[in-house]
Length: 456
Image 1 (cartoon, rainbow, N blue to C red):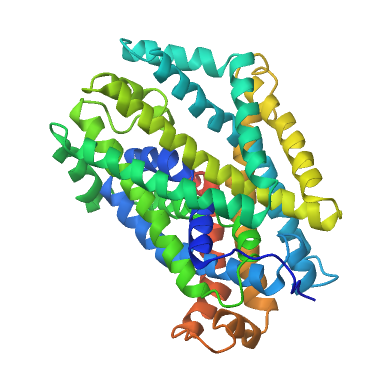
Image 2 (image 1 turned 135 degrees about the vertical axis):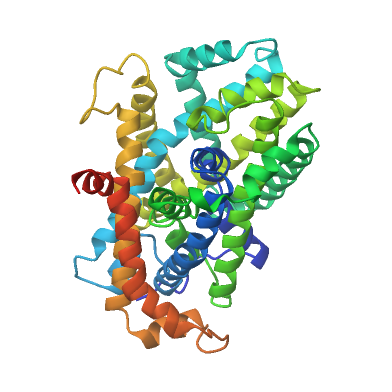
């Protein structure tokens, strides 16, 4: 049975902003720009946009179906839709993935607070590129400061989660998301007015089709999957709070557009500035914490722009940690019959243990590895390269093969009150195309496709 008394978001705006906040995070503002930089700029953007439409959007709609139709947490949903079967493993995979992602995500989120403090105290002023790199390494490999900021960020997330869906998540989203968009647009305008900004915009929007190869295509597919937060239980959990009047198709399109817009704006914010100061756009993951401080230090009013940027980064991280925390909290709260506050405390305490180990693994525990990976890298690898694509693939297979198409169509059309013009195409895609496409991403993330290339 579905949970008819389940709490719902209080308004349509709350639905959109909360769900966009669920999708938007460091994946858009940190991961997307460096992925775009190392994969050919506009060529990667084009591939990413196509993958968002043909892969990300249909899978998001599918997760919306699971969440609202079951009106349960990510694991409980499969107990409702497939009682007594092994399909429940999909739900457990999502809950565990969200929990484990927080185990290293809180560490990176904490770094944003450290950089805000450094900007305010003037510690980022007057340094060379080499000094920025050495300072970041020294800080991230330390003991007390990284853990302190990890605890602070966990506490901020906990404070939002405890009051619940309307008073906590929805209320925070209505504040955080507009502020995030405003700051992002301000930074884009500043970056686009820098000298030689045109070169950065050309890198972002003028594709060199010769750079599109199988590696770029697979990277674009993987980023589309990661950016929309599919496969980790977030969308299932949030959509379980949708009201029966929520237009699932329209909501999915709106969330996809806004999520992609944030990623593109992040590119507009970063690459004109990078080209303006002669920085190589292919620097990789250190772009945000090493390269950009160097860029800001050379700009007029660089301290102000640096502060605005790291506040933006912290807000993006917070919207993600809230949604990930809610996946685990909703599961513990509902499946173990705990009060919401106690369930949130259990999740926060458990995540802090993992996050502390992740932080220490970058320094004093770096020699203690799992399959050759530090604890931080192990959590990152297992979740993003295995659990997320695995979960997304199984979700498509489950809905495509186990759910009656009449039930699926009824839910996605609000019992026939809204049209779904391409339902048959969507159903065919989810059953046959999406699982294959996601499995290719899965194999690529594991490095098996590159291994096959070398073999043959």
